[in-house]
Image (cartoon, rainbow, N blue to C red; front, top):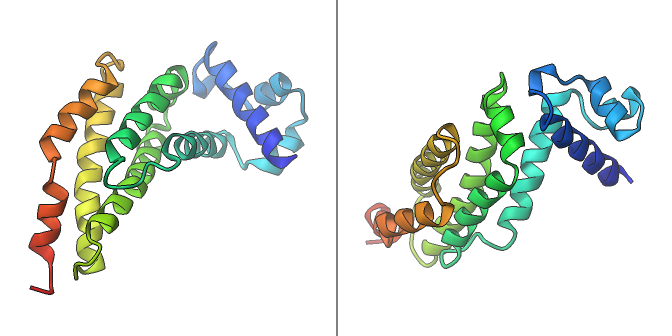
Length: 186
């Protein structure tokens, strides 16, 4: 029941974002649209930004399901782009509101989760310190999120497949080369 209510609150928020900016939406607006009481809202979320963050993470989890391997990272990135594009009104509204940091944090978290899985898989059988693996994943995380934020800022005009294709060409084999440079077993 709890997940059902959370999803209903998320749907109400996304519906309201089609009509007005995030900073003009109240908890009462969401509760009314959802057909619940304000107290029910507070049972699930501490404020609207908590709901926004939960919504972002739910979308990310769905987008990345099973796409955290070396052979599927491009598909994972494409699905992140597609999830953002699918939720364009939500993302653009949140991005242009006072909670831009939530969009950035969301993108950093999901991208790191994808990349650390790729790095771990590519490092199998190598002796590479955990801090070095994290550094490599962070490096690529910041590059990808920078591209994504620029894409969002510019109105999501470029085709996601084109961006991911260009990114794939740029970093093809680079994660493996980076890991080889950090090996401690040579």
